[in-house]
Amino acid sequence: MTAATDAPPAPMTHREVLRALSGLLMVLFAAMVSSTVVSVALPQIVGSLKGTQSQYTWVVTATLLASTASTPVWGKLADLFDKKRLLQVAIVIFAAASLACGLVENTGQLIALRAVQGLGMGALQVLVQVIIGAMVSPKERGRYNGYLGGVMAVSTVGGPLLGGAITDTDWLGWEWCFFLAVPICVIAFFMLSRTLHLAETKKPDTKVDYVGATLIAAGVSLLLLWVTFVGNDFDWISWQSAAMVAGSVVLLGAATVVESKVREPVVPLHVIKRRDPALAVVASLAVGMAMFGGAVFLGQYFQISRGFSPTEAGLLTIPMMFGVLVASAVAGRLVSQSGKVKPYILTGTLVLTAGFGMLATIDHTTSLVFMGVGMFLVGTGVGMSMQNLVLVVQNSVPLRELGAASGAITFFRSLGGTIGVSVLGAVLANQVADKIASGLAALGIDAGAGGGAGDLDLEAMPGPVAEVVRAAYGDATGHLFMISACIAVAGFLAALFLSPVELRETVDLPEQIALGEETVLGAK
Image 1 (cartoon, rainbow, N blue to C red):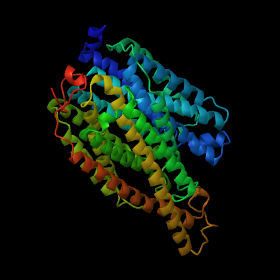
Image 2: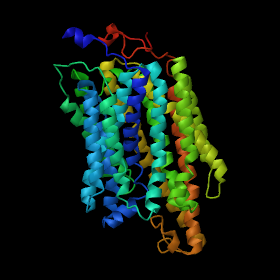
Image 3: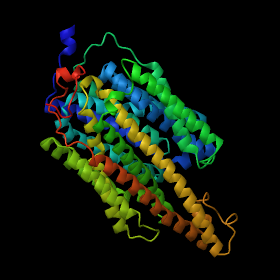
Image 4: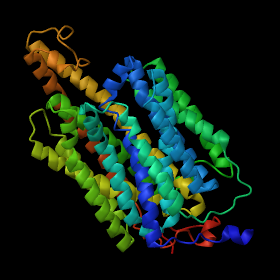
């Protein structure tokens, strides 16, 4: 039994890896696109279900909470149980919830099922990365992570385009925003059943840290609830903010104590306390905040400020998608050839900063060509840095901790994106309200009677008022990208202090390192 436990898993051939990778990328695309494809269709969805504005928010928040809070838990489960079976369970959960979301009769049902969908989504995002890490060495992983990063970014940026096309197509209903993922998941399930072959080790003394997992999920959920509603339902400085932030700190503090004492922690503190994993976490937070926070508001800018349809707004984000695809593929291959990852992360965060710097100068009349160049730079920066930051963490841990480490960095990137969207959304709302008020005052119109920041039915507005609203959104969006540029600088500084390590060529760390002795990142 001991020999079987200590034996390293048999490596898959390149052909076997590619066959399994096809199914992994399919299911990852389905999971990632489901979080963005409904963005432009939500008004129609909630309207047809006769939902309220509060329920509108919860349709988004329920998925976000379940996905982000459960990510580290799924990552740890991947270290304790059969990764292939766990992935298949996650596919079934996600596909069943997606199908049910398209069959709901009211918004209450939709919110509950979106939470279940979020559980599957969080599982799929981290398990795909864990399984790729179990199949190939960190050095070779760069090539495959290029494909992974491309799919993640295209689904994130391209989801609104797909959602816009579904919304604008008469013979398709909003239900297809959810149904779309089901056939993809079914095909991927059977593909992976035949092509994915992982050597799993037996763990007879497995113990799941349920207390730590519960504390982490509760603390993160409370923090995300505060981030989601602060600035809208209550002020930043209020008793609600104090209670939620203090409660989150207490819960996460208790989780830290538990995680430092249990034998099988959900989040491996000894890993993320090391210099390079800690810096990679900081950089991932920054990239997540900058990418998700900035990209989310591009579609709104093109539709409200520039007057494009949902489909046209999605098409205008193609330069960003193209930048991600090219940079992910090229940087991934170069990383695999050289074994060096820091130069590409450093360059990526610098290009990301430059792209957001360009977009920080836009207003409601900016040339679309200029914006295209800025978006291409942003996409290139994301493609060069996002998945390579995962590699930094994965390169520092043995195979038995791969799931928890991957879950941790994926969790922090998602958390960064959530915080970025909320903070930038609050900034946008304040900027737009001020600009509309001053613009209407210049026209001699009372802002309370002329259609404020919450009224986006531009077609029903008088021409001069609609122009004020368009200009307000266009001019305010530049401020968001300036904030994103500053956040990207933080990612660049974190990358600057990464060690110039060389990725190892083995799937697992040497035996003496795997048993817990002192390590040097990149040890051969």
